[in-house]
Amino acid sequence: MLKFILKRFGYMIVTLFIAITITFMLIHTIPGDPLAAMARNLPPQIKANYYEQHGLNKPVIVQYQKFLENLIVHRSLGESLAYPGRDIAKTIGEHAPISARIGIQAVALGFTIGVILGIVAAFNRGKWPDYLVMFIAILGISVPGFVVASLLQLGFTVHLRWFPTTGWGTFKHTVLPSIAAAFGGIATYARYMRANCLDVIGQDYVITAKAKGVSKLSLIWKHIIRNAILPAITILGPQLAMIFVGGFVIETIFAIPGLGQYLVSAINDRDYPMVMGQTMFISTLLIVSLFVVDIVYGLVDPRIRVSKGSR
Image (cartoon, helix red, strand yellow):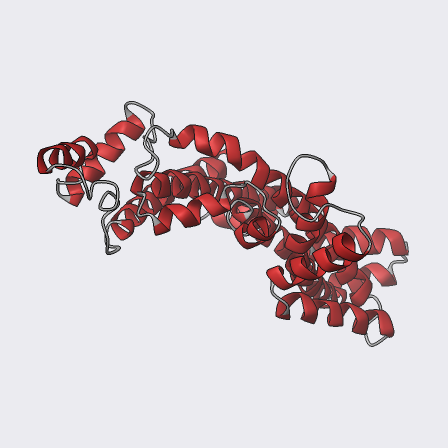
């Protein structure tokens, strides 16, 4: 197991380095100048000094080397170009927890409800609970999150007045955004669990367990759910990482000061350091989540770590 973990950790470091490199090169290919609007009315010498200060007058490879030096040696993500003086690490530290709170609630809600609905649908195949779950799944896939968010606002804030329409501060402010962000996840997990439960139910070892007189509860939990839930765990990891940017539209609708809208504005402003800082943060979370998923997979099903360890 230790060898398996060390190998996956090595893959994680290499993948993160590749992701950082590709993002840095791509962001510098976007047309436009991040300082053009700010330095438009400055004297030529001051403008040249400004570009020299931020290294924008140097080749991209030199800028990349400087970025790696600041990151590895000085452990710094730098400052924003669009908003001078705004520390990128501090910005991420201030706004990431807000997005994380909404995202974690949404993922927990989507995973729990989706898994339960998928199990109910599988064990009632061809009956009305199955059709109802599939109808919910189709809605979750077809209806965009911003439409769900708008409908929730209309129903629960305008008409019923149970929750605040926009803003941030209390638990009530998180309820509707979390439900809106979880709606697609509920549909995804329900479909995955239904399909995998039906596949596992038809396996020989389940039929054998039934023939041996295994109790229904033990059969469902130990033989069916435990094996059928593995694909759901796979998509759970990336979803946990993408909670910081996946709901930026919902954050905008509910006026939530999260991290997603900062990433969008940074791209529009050609704010290279801010884009790199947030991309690195999100990439690290995504890759670490996949690393954790691999370990969980190995713990849930020992055959996986044995097969991967033999490669």
